[in-house]
Amino acid sequence: MAEVLVYVDHVDGAVRKPTLELLTLARRIGEPVAVALGNGAGDTASALAEHGAVKVLTDEAAEYADYLVVPKVDALQAAVAAVSPAAVLVPSSTEGKEIAARLALRLGSGVITDAVDLEAGGEGPVATQSVFAASYTTKSRVSKGTPVITVKPNSAAVEAAPAAGTVEALSVTFSEQATGTKVTSRTARESTGRPELTEAAIVVSGGRGVNGAENFSLIEGLADSLGAAVGASRAAVDAGWYPHSNQVGQTGKSVSPQLYIANGISGAIQHRAGMQTSKTIVAVNKDAEAPIFDLVDYGVVGDLFAVVPQLTEEIKARKG
Ligand SMILES: Cc1cc2nc3c(=O)[nH]c(=O)nc-3n(C[C@H](O)[C@H](O)[C@H](O)COP(=O)(O)OP(=O)(O)OC[C@H]3O[C@@H](n4cnc5c(N)ncnc54)[C@H](O)[C@@H]3O)c2cc1C
Image 1 (tube, rainbow, N blue to C red):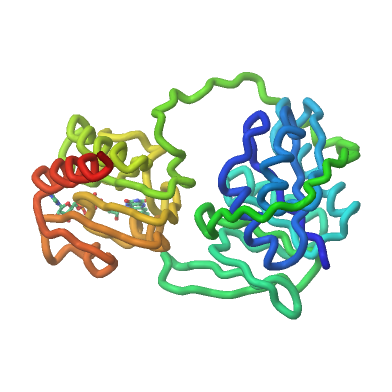
Image 2 (image 1 turned 90 degrees about the vertical axis):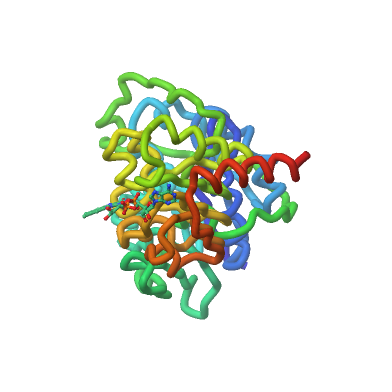
């Protein structure tokens, strides 16, 4: 069976959820071989084996942390040369997309970004994308070289599928460009204790209807009752009520959670572009004609200041 390379996103050995989702998809195409780089790469092996990696190629060189993406591209290129995979899968983060693009260029291969599903095909893996503000769903496959595909978080369920996960050292020779851009300092972002927006299974968002930064505590309260991330419309962000890093939409982040709850958001096309592929969409809006209601699975026509606190209390009560 053909091998499929999966690029591992991890923090000091703790594997992030989108990588485990990639392993689920990789198993549809072939045998997953994971590539883990940097500090703690070796510690990723048990989680990766538990989710189907037959092999884990590791390299803990300091270059991966000290420089921007090129050392990682060098390593993936070395892995492709060693394995001759049927495809290379990379999580669709900003960094992941840059790595994928550079790798595809080096390999002379086609690249597909932001896939939301992946299946085996006679002539190579077929990727599903949601395009033009999610107005169209397309299926495509790479017709030249080794397919390099980035996949959005929450595109597949994490499934345990124990495999050998044999750890092998990956031999990497860094290119001249590898040390071209050095990381000069790092500042950890203050932790909110909430999940990362693009990876969260549930996202609770607030828009102009929230009517002030101080009222976002209502949105945060609902999010915390569900263990969710907090999102915001551009109107709320532009008003300075919530940080830009939480903006959902065309010029913000693209999310695809199991559940998206939009509060006081009208549903402009640019907002929809960032959340329309969510599995279940709920909206609370006091205007029954708001366009967001064209999109929802469940809609509540009502004042969010009345609805959201009740919803939060009910969820807390049911969780007991
Ligand atoms: C190039 C470009 C890029 C853009 N990118 C983005 C983007 O990335 N993300 C994004 O979100 N937007 C983006 N926009 C802006 C977008 O067009 C909308 O202006 C924006 O999404 C509106 O935000 P909103 O829904 O919060 O506000 P509004 O459209 O003003 O809607 C507020 C809603 O709240 C409801 N409401 C008010 N009070 C209450 C209440 N008490 N209870 C319940 N409901 C209430 C109202 O009925 C209304 O439907 C972009 C625009 C452009 C031109």
